[in-house]
Image (cartoon, rainbow, N blue to C red):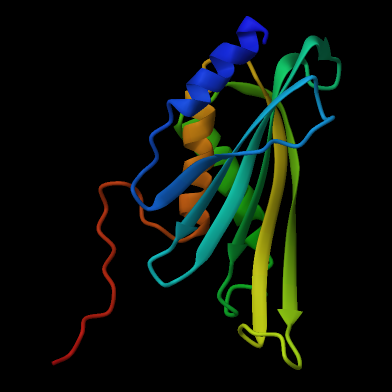
Length: 181
């Protein structure tokens, strides 16, 4: 295992997310790069929204011209949406800002950031269980880390999912509806 990759993985393993974020190592995709590592996360939001995602580290010791480096991070995130926000024309921009602001706020130095936002609506019929209608935002993105200290990148991944699930910033209390009685 190359030393650069070993240090990068150790940094990702050092990430300690906020309590609402469940973070686990998962089997990485194969054949994308000579060396790969992956984390998966799930977050339940205050109103029952669910956000899930994967962060994949790709390492090619020879580098990749399109990457502009040897360590590429790939993120996939999916968030359930309330039907009221699905038609907002700014929703894709808001979804992308979850990633860019998390990277900036966590100090994750990077280059070559790119990605897509996809909005989906699904209707269930027949014997398929679950809600009759669902709406999701899917974010796919990738960027190149400038060094092996990937802890800020892992923290940004957790922050992205916390924002997608509707969690307030750390240290801010969520004021839900009061129970009568």
